[in-house]
Each structure stands twice: as C-alpha cells, then as structure tokens.
Image 1 (spheres, rainbow, N blue to C red):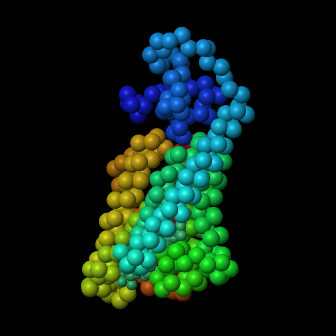
Image 2: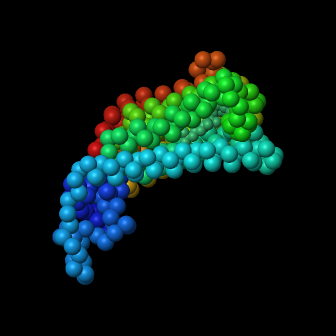
Image 3: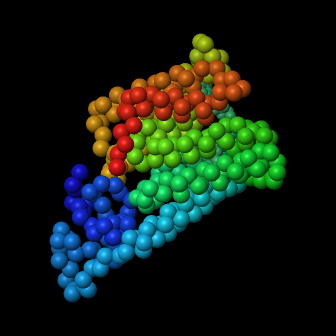
Length: 307
Ligand SMILES: Nc1ccn([C@@H]2O[C@H](COP(=O)(O)OP(=O)(O)OP(=O)(O)O)[C@@H](O)[C@H]2O)c(=O)n1
Ligand SMILES: C/C(=C\CO)CCC[C@H](C)CCC[C@H](C)CCCC(C)C
C-alpha cells in the first residue's frame, strides 16, 4: 500500500521508536509531525542545511516509547472516566433513559477503546499499557460492586436497576473481555477487533432495537426478537468490517476483502444465533458473544499474526 500520503521510510533504527505506531515498512516517523523530515534519501532534500542526523541510543528511544504509552494510557483512562460521567450527567437529568444510557456506554466504551489502540507505540509493552485502562475499570467495578466505596454515577450509568452488585456481572465480564482481547490479539490479529465489534456494537444494538421494535419474538426465546437479532447481525457485521478497514488503512492488517467479508458474515451469524439463545444466570451475553466470535473468527481467519 504505497500511497503518496504514506511515506515509505527506511527510518534509522533509533528513530524508529519515535514513529507513530504503524507497523511494517509504511511508517510515518513521529518527527514527521514534530520536526523537519528525516533526510533519508527518500524525502526531498531539506532546503536548510540541517545538522547531520544522529542515531539516538536505543535507551532514549525506548524512553520515548514509554512516555508515548504512558501518555496514551492516561488519555484513554481520562476518556473512559469522561464517557461514564457524561452518561451519568444525562441520566441524572432525565435526558436519557437509564437502559439506553447503559447500552450506549456498552457500545461506545469498547469501540472507542479499540479505536485508540493505534496511539500506543510499536513496543511489545504497548498492549500492557493499553490493558491498564480496562484493568483499572475492572478494579473500579469490583470495589463499587462489593460496596467497598460508592460511585453513584458509575452505578446509575452502567446498571439496569441501580444495584451495586450488578456491576459484578455484565460490566465486569465486559472489561475482562477488553483485557483479554488487548493482551492476546491486540493490533496483530483481526480476531480481537471482530470479537469486540460483535460484543460492543452487535450486542449493544440488539438490545436498543429489540426493546423498541421487538414485537415479533424468536420462537425458541420469547425474551429475544427478530428485530433485535437481525439488528445485531447487520450492525455487528458493518462495525466489524469498519474496524478491520480502519486498522487496514493504518497498515496493521493486509486482508483479502472478499474472503474477509464472508468470514465476518459467518462470525456475525453465529454470534447472533448464540446471543438469541436463552441466557442463564451464569452465561451472560458479555461472555457468550465475544467468546463465540473469537472461536469462529479464529477458525475462519487463523491467528493471522500480523507484525
Ligand atoms: N436479540 C435481542 C436482544 C435483545 N432484545 C431486547 O433487549 C432486551 C435486553 O436484551 P439482553 O441481551 O437481555 O440485555 P443484556 O445484554 O442482558 O443487557 P442489559 O443487562 O442491559 O439488559 C431484551 O429483554 C429484549 O427486549 C431483543 O429483543 N432481541
Ligand atoms: C455497561 C457496560 C457493560 C454491560 O453490558 C460497559 C461498562 C463500561 C465500563 C464501566 C468502562 C469501560 C471503559 C473502557 C475500558 C475504556 C473506554 C475508553 C474510551 C476512550 C471511552
């Protein structure tokens, strides 16, 4: 994918750490935006006589990555807090129903979390920094779920009935799946991205559409409807393809799109059927949908570990 917008730079190894986290050959060194382009022979020669470029010791470059990942984690952490606080504000002022607030937090949290993965560095530690965000929220849910502390805003924006113990089910399973996908699949496999698109986008929209237009129930489950399930299949598919395209444009995935569309359609279909089944006290949608998606996506795509 060599477009004019993407400069192909054999960036010096030391400078490689200062580049945006785009994998492979197609990299845009961070210096592109923060300082004059590196004179690598590919760029037009700089007009001014710039001092010869000196390789930074790897330790300094590693330090830059550490700063980048810490900063990125802080930004995403702040975003998580802001998102929950925003929906709490809207719910408290009766500008939005609590059930709709919960579903919008469900949809937006995971998709935005994945959407911010490219701001982390290319280091092997980046995924651990990213996982810190759902981990902190996991601890937050456990603390408030056991009423060790009280956060009415959190409880009102992510529970059905405003009971603290509700935090220990759907929301907790949800953030655990975010941690799992970030650590195991990260930006290197489409499996994690698809699984989160189905859990966040597909399952979230099924609830919203099903509650509103779900008069025609599914024969084997009177709690679920055709409107909810069809919405889950369509929206889960579209969001999955959209997220894969996003990561492909940034250079993380190189996909055969005809195959990919078929595979994602299969994942979406199987996940939708599983979601439509009666849930038990133990098996929550936030477990069954992502795990089913992971299994079918893995069998369809293979791990497809993209460096
Ligand atoms: N395929 C689906 C999924 C959901 N729904 C509607 O959305 C409601 C909640 O769906 P459910 O998946 O049970 O919600 P949860 O994932 O458990 O989330 P929450 O705890 O917010 O209800 C259902 O009762 C139903 O009215 C539907 O009609 N068809
Ligand atoms: C209501 C939820 C699940 C029930 O089905 C979602 C709970 C969400 C957590 C409370 C908050 C999770 C935040 C994410 C880990 C990070 C989001 C970052 C982004 C930039 C908003």
